[in-house]
Amino acid sequence: MNKKILIIGVSKGFGYALAYFLLKRNFDVVLVSRNRLKLEEIKAKLSKYGNIEIIDADVGSREAIKYVKEKIGNIDGIAISIGGYFEDNIYNIGNIDELINNNIKYPIYIINELLDSLRNNSTILLVSNSYILNRGKIKENLSYSISKAANAKLVDILSSELIDKNIRVVGIAPGTMEGDFEPERDYKKLRKIGEPRGTPEDIAVVASWLFTEEAEWINGVVIPVDGGYNQ
Image 1: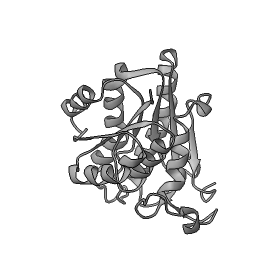
Image 2 (image 1 turned 45 degrees about the vertical axis):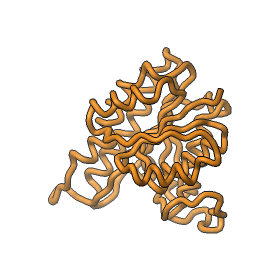
Image 3 (image 1 turned 90 degrees about the horizontal axis):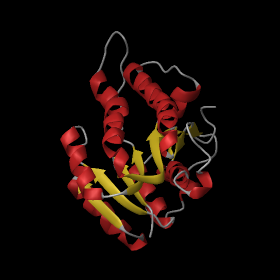
């Protein structure tokens, strides 16, 4: 029986690419997004690679998370990449609640609700940002920076809390991802090591590997995946 991974916050970039690479590694995947049409388009293109389920739900409510839980049964991992971005500073604060929710509150609520759905040796993956992780300060990114920094710290704290349950918690910290994902394209021609922008494939191939048995000794860390640009 294939292991099953739940991907929450599916875009046409990273989430789509992650589903593709997980399917190629013989995982089953469940995709969750508010946009039913987008989910159906992705499923139509990826079904030939393996088993894929879709659930349209807004995980901003705990009732919706409970609904997802009822649908999925037991799973072997969760990838949470809800996203959101805008620029602001202390003089002109944007919708800080949105980013705090997406990067801190919702991941905590999701993990709390789905803990007893996770099988032994499960993995939880969170997505931070490599610039925040390595340089720490970005002008005009007050809300984004503090929410992503907290997201990275969440990996550290949850890994220690869940280690007795044999659940790993890991993070990835991508740089800027450019463009939508397209299955089977030669993405390596689209970027060079050290450039500021990578492709969704560059990030997703690493993220998918973190769910494999080869990565089971990696726990409680956030791995930069940015081609070295922000090091």
